[in-house]
Each structure stands twice: as structure tokens, then as C-alpha cells.
Image (cartoon, rainbow, N blue to C red; front, side, top):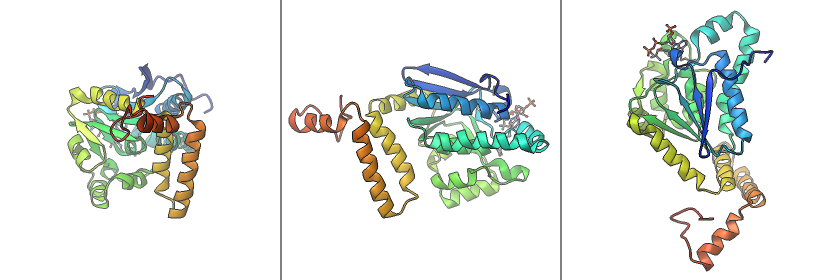
Length: 275
Ligand code: ACO
């Protein structure tokens, strides 16, 4: 990026017990996405992708905000004066917010602790799961200052919200809280703020008990088949299933069947394979 990366100060990364916490770190600006924050997120997500210690990645925000959207001053006003730089930022922003997160090889959870506006909806939807604080505040606020939900926001929101709900919020800009976000299925569930971290860790631990190769193929396949026709999906799913058997170093398929059918040590309908 022509020397624009300066060491990750806009994003904190903390690792604990298999969970990597990637934290937007501009609390004084409600974690609005400045160019530097985009570059730092790109780096943090890229590093976590190949990091063997990262089994689950959680994205959250420092302070009272998850992410207040694109930085109106640094990305829009100042970026408009320097289109070449703005294009670089735009590329990095699309790359981490959508492509990298959507296809991230391990489970991802958006832990929405506070404000979530505009451009922040893209990483919100790209994560496999989203858990919100009941009093988090969401909004497709673009219309409130004269633009549309761009940079893929309109496209990705239609993946998770109904046309009625999404269009309502895109056209009115009305903010809504975490409870309402769960009702509209924009997030999986909302919990009181003081339980947010514990609930997130609980979900992450549940995921870490699963066979990681099966989990990876499952998320990739589930997300991608939606845009395939039936014969493409059938062949692709068969190929993914074969891929798991080749990659799985735990031999989960054979072991799982053996432990259920022969050893009778577990019931796969109820719990994960004990290994
Ligand atoms: N871009 C640039 N600066 C921002 C942004 C933003 N998106 N959001 C907050 N800030 C800055 C404020 O300018 C302020 O800076 P200052 O202290 O230098 O004056 C600081 O963050 C704190 O913001 P306040 O408004 O004082 O904080 P408050 O907690 O009262 O309100 C809220 C938070 C509701 C998030 C408010 O800041 C806001 O409406 N922000 C804009 C949200 C938005 O519409 N985002 C853009 C969506 S469109 C898109 O992403 C493409």
C-alpha cells in the first residue's frame, strides 16, 4: 500500500484458548473505518487465516461501538480529493470486509457490542454468526446523508433480511436495537450486554468441538451453493465431501461410524464425535 500500513494501531488482536479476538480500535471515533483501519483489518484477517492458533475468529469493537461505518471525513471527504488513494482503500476495504471474511477458512463470529452503521453491515453479514448486545444500535444510515448503501451493503443485506425489512431500513434510515436485529434475523440472537462475551465464548467453544475439516467444508459449501443451479450444487457438494475425506487428519468419518455402530460410545444425532 505504498507505505500506508503503520503497524496495526487501529486494530487490536488478542488470542486466548483458540479464539482470536480482532478488535476495531478507534473508540474515540466510534470505530469508524478510516483508511488505516481498513489496512490494519486486512492485515489482521490475513494473518488469522493461516494462523494455527486461531480456531475461531471473533470481530468486535473497543468502547461503546462495534463500528460506525465508513469514516465520513477520512474516507469520503478527504478521499474524494485523492481518488487514487481512495481506490486503494476501497480495494482493501472490499477485500477484508467481504471476500476474506466470507470465505475465511475457520468459523467467524461478529460480536456486536454497540453501534453498527452503514458499511459495517458488510463484515456483519460476511461473518458466519452474529451475536448482538440487546442494546446495540444498528442503522442503514446512508440515506440520512444522501447516499445509498453501497460497497456491497445493499447486496449482502438482501442475503439475510427480507425485502420488506431491508428496504424499510434502507429507505427510512431508522435505527433499531439488537433485539429487533435478532427478530429480523440480521443477527442470530441478542443477549444482555453483560452476557455478550460469555455467550460468544460459549458458541466458539461449541464450534471448536467439531471436526475442523468438516466445519470448513460445511461453511464454504453452504454459503456457495445458494448461487448454483441444482446440478452444479450436486457435483460441487460431492467434490467437497471427497475433499473432507482427503484432508481430515482425524479420520472422523470412519471413526465416527465405528464409535456409533460398533463401539456404541456416542450418538451422532445428539453430540459431536468425541475423537
Ligand atoms: N465517520 C467519521 N467520524 C465519525 C463517524 C463516522 N462514521 N462516526 C463517529 N465519528 C466521530 C465523530 O465525528 C466524533 O468525532 P469528534 O469527537 O472528533 O467530534 C466521534 O466519532 C464521536 O462521535 P459522536 O457523534 O460524538 O458519538 P455519539 O456516541 O454521540 O454518537 C453515533 C455515535 C450515533 C455512531 C454518531 O457518531 C453517528 O451518527 N455516526 C455516523 C454513523 C453513520 O451514519 N455512519 C456512516 C454510515 S454510511 C457508510 O458507512 C457508507
